[in-house]
Image (cartoon, rainbow, N blue to C red; front, top):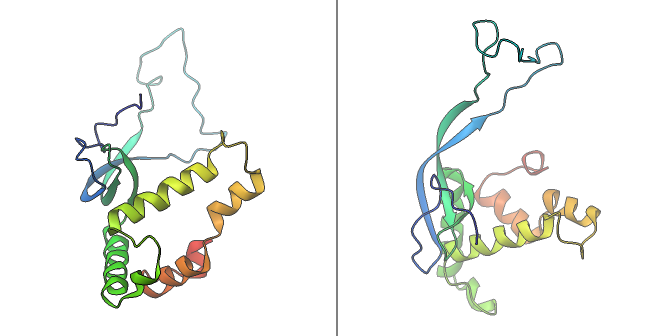
Length: 160
């Protein structure tokens, strides 16, 4: 049984979906060794000895959901709109007829890409070497890289 994240997961609909919504993120706090605070256990709560709570922010994101309602990844709304436009332009121009099996919709294709990436970089996947796992984090197939450059305005520096 998979854990449920009530902030991002939805009630399963039986199909892949994309929803644009507000998602909360934890802001990582950059600390140096001098800034690290070691609590005093003898005096657990005081003005000088207080808990450091994490900071949160909310951002609008396009959440990509699998058939079981789990959020498998998020994109910025702008990136999603560009990829969605590219998908529909390719479909309308007949480029999807050359692919077997033809893609159903943009949501299922994005779920497939994200799940494939997660499996490839998973630490439990013993059939793939660490070098290959790291390459999945850096290198994209040339046709996906071209689409990202043309439609999402991603430069080589941004994808590195």
